[in-house]
Image (cartoon, rainbow, N blue to C red; front, side, top):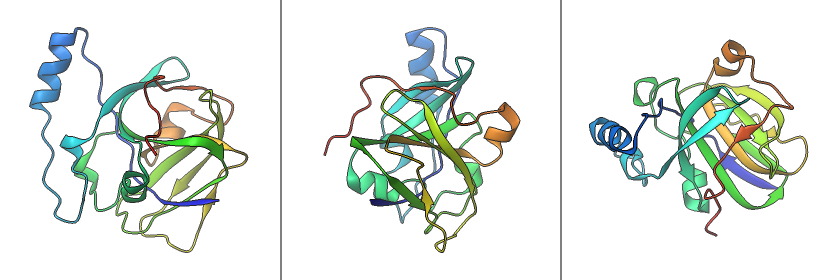
Length: 170
């Protein structure tokens, strides 16, 4: 079982054209966070879609060191409700996240290799006493600002479309 520190998932509405997308990404600046090894502006972003209708722009956490940092040290103003963070693992396995050094409440969805949501949780800031376990073997975990699942009706059994290019590098 892998123990991962939770990270807030953020998504930004996608622009219609590649030029608009590049302009949007250029304009999008995030504050420097001294405690973070991986600054948000330096992480890869991809578009994900939940239940074929809710689009998010997600930071990709594709290495163990990135997955460990996740959403640590972020504040609510560091990401939008349209942002997310996707954690990619080499093989499906039972996953466990916690909220060490994570200051913002998050929704997390554990997904199988096809993006099917196995289960979800809402995690509270700085909760290191609870291990949020996947119900089954998950290949992805996706985090959002807390309240996203309730507002959008996101639940187990739905599909999160994650680009095939999102793969663990380790």
